[in-house]
Image 1 (tube, rainbow, N blue to C red):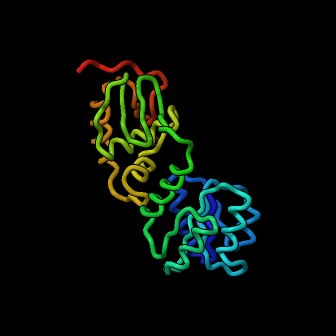
Image 2: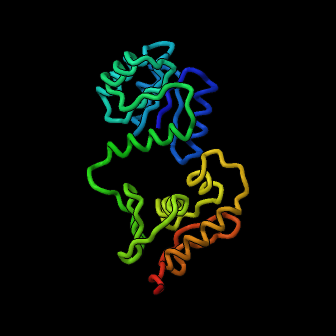
Image 3: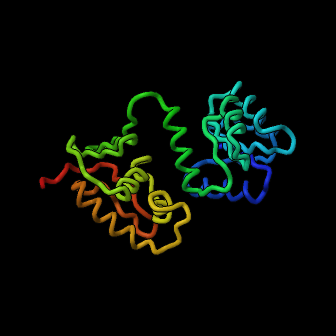
Length: 221
């Protein structure tokens, strides 16, 4: 992901928040730097750049790349939004905005640019549809709460990799979660009970959780 923002404090805050949310991020402060950066999947583009007008940068990026472009700017007039969208922006976000809204906009533009059809994560008997958030085990649907679904998605994105407690909380709760992590244990216990697959969610003491390498079959209800 590429953040193009000439205000140093805003740019650094955006980069930090997006990295905490799990994205690989590069930050630049000028239009020229944006045009010479490695090709990203998503560009957060400030329209008020010091060297090249952001709308022109948007047009030039769109001519050479299929990256999702979100115009991030203080310009809130309808005419400004129309111009940016006409020049290739996929979305338009007016400052000030919250990180949660920005992350939702990023997820939305990435969904629109994915190939048609549901994206399903599979691991042993587990299947998780990222588009509908539906979960099944051995083909049987499992009803999960939004928090449980978020935890499972975080773990299923890279089965076998240990995910820290803090990272899971930041992804499933809030990117700036600073509360007690014990709340996660309650949701993990409920998730294990609902899935009913011994060894599917492993605790790695002192580090976090991961999906087991060889999960068993679902226990009968």
